[in-house]
Image (cartoon, rainbow, N blue to C red):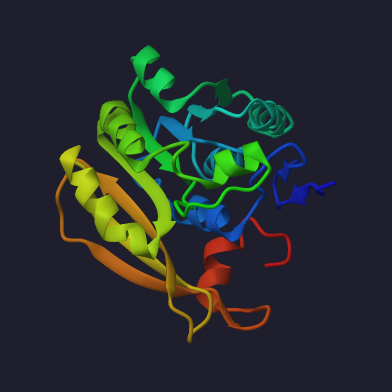
Amino acid sequence: MSKPFKFKQFTIHQDRCAMKVGTDGVLLGAWTSISNHPFSVLDIGSGTGILALMIAQRSTAQRIEAIEIDADAYEQCAANFENSAWNDRLFCYHASLLEFVEEVDDHFDLIICNPPFYSEDFKTSDASRDMARFNDAMPFEHLIYAVANLLSDNGLFSVIIPKKEEQGFIELASKGNLYPNRILHIRGNPDSDIKRSLIEFSFIQTKIETNELVIEEGRHQYTEDYINLTKDFYLKM
């Protein structure tokens, strides 16, 4: 049984979700810019709902919607929303991404996604975990297509992907007229390779602001940068 994950202002129940609360989601939820004061937000492939909840805590967005294809994860996400202080602003839909794009006329000021990204060829015996982890459940092409159709003209799209996928993802995004504005590269420690890229896209081409974040100096010795980014959420920061 997976224990609930308690943050400073909300709790995530995750026993029915294949993908548990992890560093990637927290980094993305904390780093994503809300400088354009989004009114409407979309969390694609919400899982536990952590990204939507983090944006609800950080912003004044009035309509924060999440979509989740897995039935168990959808029900858990909806319950996590309902049990939060922002339940009047949070809505979860049980739908595939392409269904959602076809049915929705709205545009969103902020779209956020921690996509499944193990494209390697192995699968486990757990279908819902596989769906959450493997990008054939949500190919990057589908994601870019959806964002290009759902993002408002001045909106921002924020995503976390493996560093090795960065160049290909940026090239794919450009076909939807989406351009990187900010990139944050993540290292686990000062000596490790860059494992993740957080990228913010918009329809506006600008000079790309690129930074790097190291999570730990040593085992459980978090860097000042990481603490400053996540301290509004983690209980012990």
